[in-house]
Image (cartoon, rainbow, N blue to C red; front, side):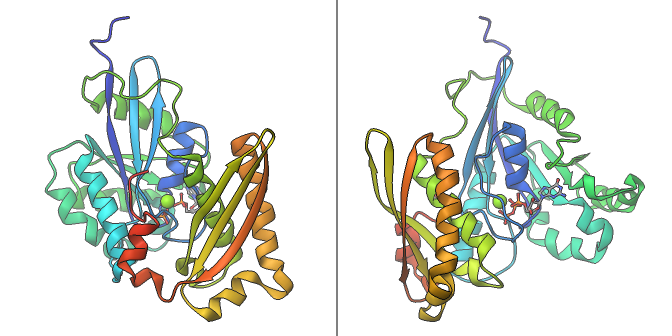
Length: 306
Ligand SMILES: Nc1nc2c(ncn2[C@@H]2O[C@H](COP(=O)(O)OP(=O)(O)OP(=O)(O)O)[C@@H](O)[C@H]2O)c(=O)[nH]1
Ligand SMILES: [Mg+2]
Protein backbone atom coordinates (compact mmCIF):
# COMPACT_ATOMS: atom_id res chain seq x y z
CA UNK A 1 0.00 0.00 0.00
CA UNK A 2 1.23 3.46 -0.81
CA UNK A 3 1.34 5.36 2.44
CA UNK A 4 2.95 8.52 1.13
CA UNK A 5 -0.22 10.51 0.69
CA UNK A 6 -1.93 9.16 3.81
CA UNK A 7 -2.98 11.88 6.23
CA UNK A 8 -3.26 11.70 9.99
CA UNK A 9 -3.56 14.37 12.64
CA UNK A 10 -5.36 15.82 15.62
CA UNK A 11 -8.47 17.97 15.43
CA UNK A 12 -9.56 19.88 18.53
CA UNK A 13 -13.32 20.40 18.90
CA UNK A 14 -13.60 23.67 20.76
CA UNK A 15 -16.54 25.85 21.65
CA UNK A 16 -18.95 27.12 24.27
CA UNK A 17 -20.79 24.58 26.45
CA UNK A 18 -23.79 22.91 24.83
CA UNK A 19 -22.77 23.79 21.24
CA UNK A 20 -22.96 20.13 20.22
CA UNK A 21 -19.25 19.18 20.22
CA UNK A 22 -19.80 15.72 21.66
CA UNK A 23 -22.78 15.09 19.39
CA UNK A 24 -20.60 16.14 16.47
CA UNK A 25 -17.90 13.67 17.51
CA UNK A 26 -20.37 10.79 17.85
CA UNK A 27 -21.96 11.64 14.53
CA UNK A 28 -18.63 11.72 12.67
CA UNK A 29 -17.67 8.36 14.17
CA UNK A 30 -21.08 6.83 13.59
CA UNK A 31 -21.01 5.53 17.17
CA UNK A 32 -21.44 7.01 20.60
CA UNK A 33 -18.18 7.54 22.45
CA UNK A 34 -18.95 10.80 24.25
CA UNK A 35 -21.96 11.35 26.48
CA UNK A 36 -24.48 14.00 25.44
CA UNK A 37 -27.08 15.79 27.53
CA UNK A 38 -29.21 18.92 27.08
CA UNK A 39 -27.19 20.49 29.91
CA UNK A 40 -24.15 22.72 29.45
CA UNK A 41 -20.82 21.44 30.84
CA UNK A 42 -21.49 17.79 30.24
CA UNK A 43 -18.01 16.91 29.00
CA UNK A 44 -15.29 17.00 31.65
CA UNK A 45 -12.36 15.34 29.89
CA UNK A 46 -10.50 15.40 26.64
CA UNK A 47 -12.19 12.63 24.72
CA UNK A 48 -10.39 11.05 21.80
CA UNK A 49 -12.38 9.70 18.86
CA UNK A 50 -10.68 8.03 15.90
CA UNK A 51 -12.07 8.10 12.37
CA UNK A 52 -10.20 5.90 9.91
CA UNK A 53 -10.71 5.52 6.19
CA UNK A 54 -8.56 4.56 3.21
CA UNK A 55 -6.84 7.89 2.88
CA UNK A 56 -6.78 9.41 6.33
CA UNK A 57 -7.06 8.94 10.07
CA UNK A 58 -8.73 11.83 11.86
CA UNK A 59 -7.97 12.02 15.58
CA UNK A 60 -10.68 14.12 17.20
CA UNK A 61 -10.33 15.59 20.65
CA UNK A 62 -13.67 16.50 22.17
CA UNK A 63 -13.23 19.01 24.98
CA UNK A 64 -15.13 20.62 27.85
CA UNK A 65 -16.97 23.77 26.77
CA UNK A 66 -15.06 27.02 27.14
CA UNK A 67 -16.75 29.66 29.32
CA UNK A 68 -15.90 32.32 31.85
CA UNK A 69 -17.06 30.63 35.03
CA UNK A 70 -14.72 30.52 38.01
CA UNK A 71 -13.74 27.83 40.50
CA UNK A 72 -11.24 24.98 40.67
CA UNK A 73 -13.25 22.47 38.68
CA UNK A 74 -13.83 25.01 35.94
CA UNK A 75 -10.16 25.82 35.84
CA UNK A 76 -9.30 22.14 35.33
CA UNK A 77 -11.93 21.83 32.60
CA UNK A 78 -10.64 24.90 30.80
CA UNK A 79 -7.08 23.63 31.01
CA UNK A 80 -8.22 20.44 29.29
CA UNK A 81 -9.75 22.47 26.47
CA UNK A 82 -6.71 24.70 25.99
CA UNK A 83 -4.39 21.70 26.15
CA UNK A 84 -6.34 20.04 23.33
CA UNK A 85 -6.07 23.21 21.33
CA UNK A 86 -2.28 23.28 21.88
CA UNK A 87 -1.94 19.70 20.66
CA UNK A 88 -4.11 20.00 17.55
CA UNK A 89 -3.15 20.22 13.89
CA UNK A 90 -6.54 21.61 12.94
CA UNK A 91 -8.89 23.69 15.10
CA UNK A 92 -12.60 23.20 14.76
CA UNK A 93 -14.79 25.71 16.53
CA UNK A 94 -18.31 24.41 17.10
CA UNK A 95 -21.08 26.96 17.65
CA UNK A 96 -24.83 26.65 18.10
CA UNK A 97 -25.99 28.38 14.91
CA UNK A 98 -29.64 28.19 15.84
CA UNK A 99 -29.08 29.85 19.22
CA UNK A 100 -27.22 32.86 17.79
CA UNK A 101 -29.64 33.21 14.88
CA UNK A 102 -32.41 33.55 17.47
CA UNK A 103 -30.44 35.45 20.08
CA UNK A 104 -27.56 37.35 18.44
CA UNK A 105 -26.74 39.04 21.74
CA UNK A 106 -25.45 35.72 23.14
CA UNK A 107 -22.72 35.41 20.54
CA UNK A 108 -20.32 37.99 21.91
CA UNK A 109 -20.14 36.74 25.52
CA UNK A 110 -19.92 33.12 24.36
CA UNK A 111 -17.15 33.84 21.86
CA UNK A 112 -15.21 36.16 24.12
CA UNK A 113 -12.91 33.63 25.85
CA UNK A 114 -12.18 31.93 22.52
CA UNK A 115 -11.74 34.90 20.26
CA UNK A 116 -8.27 36.14 21.16
CA UNK A 117 -6.62 32.71 21.24
CA UNK A 118 -8.24 31.79 17.92
CA UNK A 119 -7.32 35.05 16.24
CA UNK A 120 -3.68 34.55 17.24
CA UNK A 121 -3.65 31.17 15.48
CA UNK A 122 -1.76 30.27 12.34
CA UNK A 123 -3.13 26.73 12.21
CA UNK A 124 -6.11 25.86 10.01
CA UNK A 125 -9.33 27.06 11.59
CA UNK A 126 -12.75 25.64 10.69
CA UNK A 127 -16.08 26.65 12.12
CA UNK A 128 -19.04 24.28 12.36
CA UNK A 129 -22.21 26.30 12.69
CA UNK A 130 -24.22 23.53 14.29
CA UNK A 131 -27.91 22.73 14.81
CA UNK A 132 -28.80 23.83 11.28
CA UNK A 133 -31.73 21.39 11.42
CA UNK A 134 -33.49 23.76 13.83
CA UNK A 135 -33.25 26.77 11.57
CA UNK A 136 -36.13 26.36 9.18
CA UNK A 137 -35.14 29.07 6.77
CA UNK A 138 -31.35 28.92 6.26
CA UNK A 139 -31.35 32.60 5.30
CA UNK A 140 -31.65 33.27 9.03
CA UNK A 141 -27.95 32.44 9.24
CA UNK A 142 -26.85 35.27 6.94
CA UNK A 143 -26.34 38.04 9.52
CA UNK A 144 -24.56 35.55 11.77
CA UNK A 145 -22.28 34.40 8.96
CA UNK A 146 -21.36 37.99 8.26
CA UNK A 147 -20.63 38.71 11.92
CA UNK A 148 -18.50 35.57 12.30
CA UNK A 149 -16.60 36.42 9.17
CA UNK A 150 -15.75 39.81 10.68
CA UNK A 151 -14.71 38.30 14.01
CA UNK A 152 -12.73 35.37 12.60
CA UNK A 153 -11.83 36.17 8.99
CA UNK A 154 -9.57 33.12 8.68
CA UNK A 155 -12.24 30.61 9.65
CA UNK A 156 -13.88 28.54 6.95
CA UNK A 157 -17.52 28.21 7.99
CA UNK A 158 -19.73 25.14 7.50
CA UNK A 159 -23.41 25.11 8.48
CA UNK A 160 -24.01 21.58 9.78
CA UNK A 161 -26.30 19.49 11.89
CA UNK A 162 -24.52 17.01 14.13
CA UNK A 163 -27.94 15.52 14.83
CA UNK A 164 -29.04 14.79 11.25
CA UNK A 165 -25.56 14.61 9.67
CA UNK A 166 -26.39 17.43 7.27
CA UNK A 167 -23.21 19.17 6.05
CA UNK A 168 -20.87 16.75 7.80
CA UNK A 169 -19.42 15.01 4.69
CA UNK A 170 -18.28 18.33 3.23
CA UNK A 171 -16.70 19.39 6.50
CA UNK A 172 -15.00 16.02 6.98
CA UNK A 173 -13.53 16.23 3.49
CA UNK A 174 -12.01 19.61 4.30
CA UNK A 175 -10.67 18.37 7.65
CA UNK A 176 -8.90 15.47 5.92
CA UNK A 177 -7.35 17.76 3.32
CA UNK A 178 -5.92 19.94 6.10
CA UNK A 179 -4.29 17.12 8.07
CA UNK A 180 -0.54 16.63 7.78
CA UNK A 181 0.82 13.79 5.68
CA UNK A 182 1.58 11.08 8.20
CA UNK A 183 0.89 7.38 8.75
CA UNK A 184 -2.01 6.23 10.91
CA UNK A 185 -1.29 6.39 14.64
CA UNK A 186 -3.90 3.87 15.74
CA UNK A 187 -5.18 0.53 14.38
CA UNK A 188 -7.86 1.06 11.75
CA UNK A 189 -10.61 -0.58 13.83
CA UNK A 190 -9.93 1.43 16.99
CA UNK A 191 -12.68 3.96 17.66
CA UNK A 192 -11.35 5.64 20.75
CA UNK A 193 -8.70 5.52 23.43
CA UNK A 194 -11.34 5.46 26.17
CA UNK A 195 -11.29 2.59 28.65
CA UNK A 196 -14.52 0.66 29.22
CA UNK A 197 -14.28 1.66 32.85
CA UNK A 198 -14.30 5.35 31.98
CA UNK A 199 -17.14 4.88 29.49
CA UNK A 200 -19.21 3.09 32.11
CA UNK A 201 -18.64 5.93 34.60
CA UNK A 202 -19.65 8.42 31.92
CA UNK A 203 -22.83 6.52 31.11
CA UNK A 204 -23.80 6.68 34.78
CA UNK A 205 -23.06 10.40 34.84
CA UNK A 206 -25.16 10.89 31.71
CA UNK A 207 -28.16 9.21 33.35
CA UNK A 208 -27.64 11.34 36.48
CA UNK A 209 -27.51 14.52 34.38
CA UNK A 210 -30.80 13.56 32.76
CA UNK A 211 -32.36 12.69 36.09
CA UNK A 212 -31.33 15.68 38.19
CA UNK A 213 -32.57 19.24 38.02
CA UNK A 214 -31.16 22.72 38.22
CA UNK A 215 -27.52 22.98 39.32
CA UNK A 216 -27.26 19.49 40.76
CA UNK A 217 -25.67 17.70 37.78
CA UNK A 218 -22.78 20.06 38.13
CA UNK A 219 -22.17 18.72 41.65
CA UNK A 220 -22.04 15.01 40.87
CA UNK A 221 -19.03 12.93 39.92
CA UNK A 222 -18.79 9.21 39.28
CA UNK A 223 -15.92 6.90 40.07
CA UNK A 224 -15.78 3.17 39.40
CA UNK A 225 -14.61 1.44 42.53
CA UNK A 226 -14.79 -2.22 41.55
CA UNK A 227 -14.90 -4.03 38.24
CA UNK A 228 -14.97 -7.81 38.11
CA UNK A 229 -15.59 -9.90 35.03
CA UNK A 230 -16.91 -13.42 35.28
CA UNK A 231 -17.82 -15.77 32.45
CA UNK A 232 -21.09 -14.12 31.48
CA UNK A 233 -21.50 -11.20 33.79
CA UNK A 234 -19.57 -8.09 34.80
CA UNK A 235 -19.90 -6.82 38.36
CA UNK A 236 -19.45 -3.05 38.70
CA UNK A 237 -19.52 -0.94 41.86
CA UNK A 238 -19.67 2.78 41.19
CA UNK A 239 -19.59 5.66 43.63
CA UNK A 240 -21.60 8.78 42.93
CA UNK A 241 -20.00 11.69 44.73
CA UNK A 242 -22.12 14.65 45.76
CA UNK A 243 -20.82 17.91 47.18
CA UNK A 244 -23.30 18.35 50.01
CA UNK A 245 -25.18 16.18 52.41
CA UNK A 246 -28.48 17.70 51.25
CA UNK A 247 -27.75 16.49 47.70
CA UNK A 248 -27.48 12.88 48.76
CA UNK A 249 -31.18 12.49 49.40
CA UNK A 250 -32.08 14.15 46.11
CA UNK A 251 -29.83 11.83 44.13
CA UNK A 252 -31.27 8.79 45.90
CA UNK A 253 -34.85 10.06 45.64
CA UNK A 254 -37.96 9.11 47.58
CA UNK A 255 -37.63 5.46 48.60
CA UNK A 256 -34.56 5.17 46.35
CA UNK A 257 -36.62 5.86 43.22
CA UNK A 258 -34.17 8.16 41.41
CA UNK A 259 -31.12 6.06 42.04
CA UNK A 260 -32.98 2.97 40.90
CA UNK A 261 -33.98 4.65 37.65
CA UNK A 262 -30.45 5.88 37.02
CA UNK A 263 -29.07 2.42 37.79
CA UNK A 264 -31.52 0.65 35.47
CA UNK A 265 -30.88 2.95 32.54
CA UNK A 266 -27.12 2.93 33.05
CA UNK A 267 -27.01 -0.84 33.39
CA UNK A 268 -28.80 -1.30 30.07
CA UNK A 269 -26.37 0.95 28.23
CA UNK A 270 -23.30 -0.52 29.92
CA UNK A 271 -24.50 -4.05 29.12
CA UNK A 272 -24.83 -3.04 25.45
CA UNK A 273 -21.37 -1.50 25.54
CA UNK A 274 -19.75 -4.56 27.11
CA UNK A 275 -21.92 -7.02 25.27
CA UNK A 276 -22.30 -8.84 28.55
CA UNK A 277 -24.72 -9.05 31.43
CA UNK A 278 -24.01 -6.39 34.03
CA UNK A 279 -24.61 -6.22 37.74
CA UNK A 280 -24.35 -2.57 38.72
CA UNK A 281 -24.28 -1.28 42.28
CA UNK A 282 -24.43 2.47 42.86
CA UNK A 283 -23.31 4.09 46.11
CA UNK A 284 -23.81 7.75 46.94
CA UNK A 285 -21.10 9.42 49.01
CA UNK A 286 -20.70 12.97 50.22
CA UNK A 287 -17.39 14.63 49.50
CA UNK A 288 -17.90 18.10 50.88
CA UNK A 289 -17.64 20.75 48.14
CA UNK A 290 -15.62 18.44 45.86
CA UNK A 291 -15.61 20.81 42.84
CA UNK A 292 -13.19 22.97 44.85
CA UNK A 293 -11.04 20.06 46.07
CA UNK A 294 -7.91 19.92 43.93
CA UNK A 295 -6.78 16.55 45.28
CA UNK A 296 -10.13 14.95 44.62
CA UNK A 297 -10.32 16.42 41.12
CA UNK A 298 -6.97 14.82 40.35
CA UNK A 299 -8.03 11.56 41.97
CA UNK A 300 -11.06 11.14 39.71
CA UNK A 301 -9.07 12.23 36.66
CA UNK A 302 -11.11 15.28 35.79
CA UNK A 303 -9.85 17.07 32.71
CA UNK A 304 -7.49 14.23 31.85
CA UNK A 305 -7.01 13.07 28.29
CA UNK A 306 -9.08 9.92 27.83
N1 LIG B 1 -31.33 19.96 17.10
C1 LIG B 1 -30.04 19.72 17.31
N2 LIG B 1 -29.59 19.49 18.55
C2 LIG B 1 -28.28 19.23 18.72
C3 LIG B 1 -27.37 19.20 17.63
N3 LIG B 1 -26.14 18.92 18.13
C4 LIG B 1 -26.29 18.80 19.47
N4 LIG B 1 -27.57 18.97 19.83
C5 LIG B 1 -28.12 18.93 21.19
O1 LIG B 1 -27.49 19.93 21.97
C6 LIG B 1 -27.33 19.49 23.32
C7 LIG B 1 -25.87 19.58 23.72
O2 LIG B 1 -25.13 18.66 22.96
P1 LIG B 1 -23.67 18.18 23.39
O3 LIG B 1 -23.12 17.38 22.27
O4 LIG B 1 -23.71 17.56 24.74
O5 LIG B 1 -22.92 19.59 23.49
P2 LIG B 1 -21.42 19.87 23.92
O6 LIG B 1 -20.92 21.00 23.11
O7 LIG B 1 -20.62 18.62 23.89
O8 LIG B 1 -21.64 20.36 25.42
P3 LIG B 1 -20.60 20.38 26.67
O9 LIG B 1 -19.97 19.02 26.76
O10 LIG B 1 -21.51 20.64 27.81
O11 LIG B 1 -19.64 21.48 26.41
C8 LIG B 1 -27.89 18.08 23.37
O12 LIG B 1 -29.22 18.14 23.82
C9 LIG B 1 -27.83 17.63 21.91
O13 LIG B 1 -28.80 16.66 21.58
C10 LIG B 1 -27.88 19.44 16.32
O14 LIG B 1 -27.18 19.46 15.30
N5 LIG B 1 -29.22 19.70 16.23
MG1 LIG C 1 -19.64 17.64 25.36
